[in-house]
Image (tube, rainbow, N blue to C red):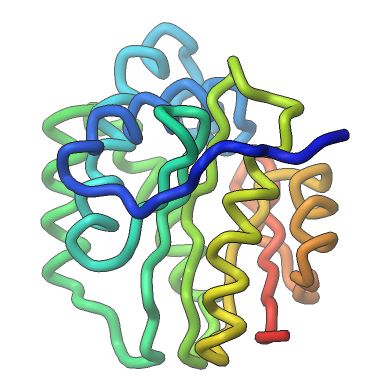
Length: 201
C-alpha cells in the first residue's frame, strides 16, 4: 500500500472546526465513545461539542496536526511530570456538562479519573486523540500523522504516551515503536483501554 502523500501541518485556531469535525466523525464507532454516549443519536449530536473542547485545549496548551484539508488530525499535549491543574479539569467538566449533558459528563469523568490515576509520571508528549476521517480510511493517513510527530520527538529525545482504545489500534501503535504497559484501563461495564509508551528512537 502506498502511504499518504499529502501534506501534514500544524493547525491553528482557524482549523478548529475542521479538526473537531474529523474527530467527531472518526470516533462515532469507537468503543470508548460508545460507552460515554450509549445512545447513538445523542453521540452524533454531542460529538462536535465534546471534541471541540479538546481541540481548544490542545491548541492552547499543546499542538494540533492536520493532514491535508481534513483527512486526519492528531492532538498532542506536553506532560512535564508535575501535578496537573485541577482547576482546569473542573472547568472542562463544567463546559462539558453544559454541552453534552450530566450523564455523559459523569461517564467521561470516570474515564478521566482512570486515565489520570495511571498516567506516567515521567516527562513525555501525550497523544489523547488521533483521528482519520472515515472518507480517508485505508490510505495510510494515521501512520503518516504518527511518523510526522514521532520523528520530531526522536530529535528532541522525548518519549510519547497514549491509550489505545482497541487491540487493533494497539497493533498499529506497536508498529511505530510503542509498547503496551502491563496494566489495562477497564471501564465498568464497558471496554478496556491499553496504555502504551514509546521511548525516543
